[in-house]
Every structure is written in C-alpha cells, then in structure tokens.
Length: 275
Ligand SMILES: NC(=O)c1ccc[n+]([C@@H]2O[C@H](COP(=O)([O-])OP(=O)(O)OC[C@H]3O[C@@H](n4cnc5c(N)ncnc54)[C@H](OP(=O)(O)O)[C@@H]3O)[C@@H](O)[C@H]2O)c1
Image (cartoon, rainbow, N blue to C red; front, side, top):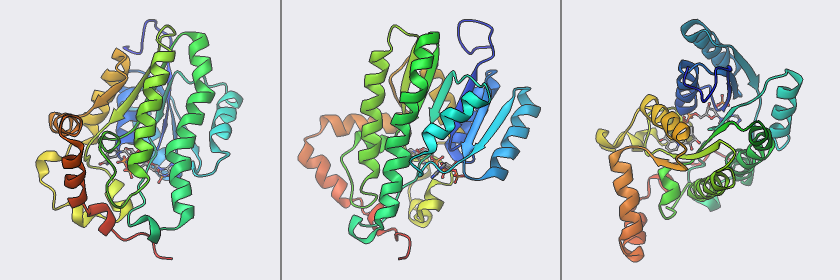
C-alpha cells in the first residue's frame, strides 16, 4: 500500500467521479489501496464505478449523489461523512464544467452554478475537511484546476479561466499553510483531456478539429496527479506541451499573448443553452 506513512486504510472522497478525469482519479486512488467516497449527480454511474473498484482492487466504495450547485451541498457532504463514520484522508475537488458562449448570452443561473461548483464548493470542502486532516497529521487534497488558469482569459466560457486561476492560487496558499501538517495540497492543471467535458459544453465538433497531439487521456492525467500530491507538489501542469504553453504565456510580452488569445474563439462560438 502506498497511501502514506502507515498501514491504516485511507479514504479518498472524489467529486465528479461519475465521468472523465474524476473517474480516473478515483480508480488511481483505489489502485493504491484507498477506500472511496464517490460524489456526483448520476447515481447509476457511481454505483457501477463502486462495483468496479470493489471487484478490481478490493477496496470499499461509498457513493453520495448530490448537486454541488446547491450551496448547502458541501456541508451536507461533510455531515454525511460524520454520520457514516467515514474519515476523509484525501479530498479530490474535481467536479466541473464550462458555460460556453458570450457572457451576455448566457443565463445567470448557469454562471452562478459554475461559481458555486468550481469556486465556492471547492473552497468550502477544503475548509470543512482540511482541519481534521491537519489535526490527524495526514491529508492529501487535489483541486482540479486547468491550464486555462495559467493563461489570460479568452472570449467565451468567461468565468472558467477565472475560476481555475482562483483554484490554483488558493491551493498554493493552502499548501504553504499546511507545510508542517503532512497535508499536501495540489492544483492539478490539465490541458485538453479526453472526457465528457466538451460534450457537456456542446463544443465537441470544434474540439475535434484540434490536433490529436495536444490531447491527453484521463488515466495519464490522474496518475500524474496522484504522484504529484503524494510528492507534495503544489501545482502540476500535465504534459510537455501544456508546460511549454504555460511557460510561453509567462515569458512572452503580454500584448502578444493577449493578441494570440483574441484568435481563440472556440468557446465563444459554442452555443450556450437555449433560453
Ligand atoms: N477535459 C478537459 O479538457 C479538462 C481540461 C482542464 C481541466 N478540466 C477540469 O477537469 C475536471 C473534470 O472534468 P472532465 O473533463 O472530467 O469532465 P466530465 O467528463 O464532463 O466530468 C465532469 C464531472 O463533474 C461532475 N459534475 C458536474 N457538475 C456537477 C454538479 N453540479 N454537481 C455534482 N457533480 C457535478 C459530473 O458528474 P454528474 O454529471 O454525474 O453530476 C462529472 O462526474 C473539471 O473541473 C474540469 O474543469 C478538464
């Protein structure tokens, strides 16, 4: 078992475990001997994954179906863990989506949901579960951000990069605050990754035009994330190409970077949900 510095069975709670990167992160934690708490809205998906990991890795897997867009959800998750006597040793804040289209054309309810799921719930779950981890002197937190959080904002998906930049900064601070507590906090920053993300956003057709070389699989992203959090790395950008892009965004003159971003209209062109 490679869960840490003793033989106790650890438990990892993964939000957005019903698909994509979250599902892969859950599989990697299970492979390393963690019991799981799988959180998302789609119950059948969570049940199927729970059965899969129990069969493959012999770990326990609990499920909790909940909509993280509900402001009460983080507290309900925390209380439910206490009620079930489940101690969360690893927290993976992964659930997320984008709201494509120009900001002016979108519904505020959708934007509010994005902030709740990808900013407020992420912060609140860290705030709820972090103190117990620090007190027990063991914790692993992965907050799923994005390469987008390292780049200037693009037209469309207006709050997405902003939310991800928030997650990166918050994770860096939390990592430093917990440096003596054996609580590792990592902001995971994938670039384009195969998942259901772009189907949900409705821009799959546009995305399919991008060269295959820039895409990564969720499995590779998840394995790199696991290694990074165990090693105590506060930020990981997945893959050489994504690291190169982030480096260019830091080193090139900002006017040039902004004019390059102005060419990227993929998210703006995707249609927001109908009124
Ligand atoms: N794919 C990429 O190219 C990419 C790149 C960079 C970063 N990311 C980030 O990676 C994370 C995972 O995305 P993905 O690519 O794996 O997308 P995905 O395949 O669409 O999975 C998204 C997950 O989030 C859950 N979720 C969404 N809204 C939720 C809500 N209101 N309440 C509870 N769960 C919710 C979904 O579960 P239910 O629908 O069952 O609730 C699903 O399990 C996101 O934070 C995303 O921003 C993705």
